[in-house]
Amino acid sequence: MLGIFFNKTLKISLLFTTLIVASTISTAVNAQETPQIFGDMKIGHKFNPDPFTVRGMSGGSVSGKRIAGRRDTLTGPCQGFFDRKPDHTLELTDKFEYLKLQIQSPEDTTLVIKGPGGSWCNDDFEGKNPGIVGEWLPGTYQIWIGSYNKNKYLPYTLQITEVK
Image (cartoon, rainbow, N blue to C red):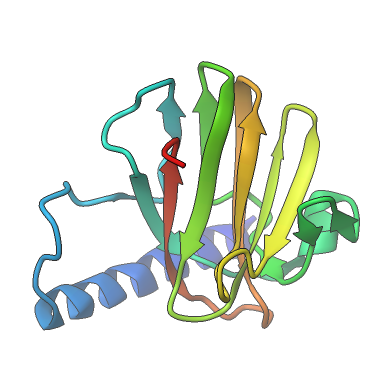
């Protein structure tokens, strides 16, 4: 249990260091409010802002196959390494005919989502960034963001949009 706490504390510490360095180097690109970190999300139709963003640090020591309970899904392979607990929980209050969830990271990351109807994995949805797009049922989804190397932690931004 102490290891899980330490890993999450280390990831948060690394993320804050990365964010501080990035904010001192770069200027603001847009006026959108600062994304939350490792947050739980609850959204319904016509959520605002769109895209909704949240930041975190990928990685851990548990294989994607173990998290998802399978090697592959229809949306892609279950590769990489993750924390035991999800990085985010997403509650959808409505059914979405179209919803896109995508990760942006400076390095190659992976994705596992568990929710109503099963589990989904992805790698390289757009370039080296994972994502999943399609119809989503209402309910609670657990989201893990992983790295290819065990215990390698990478900063990321998760974006959710209902705009095609």
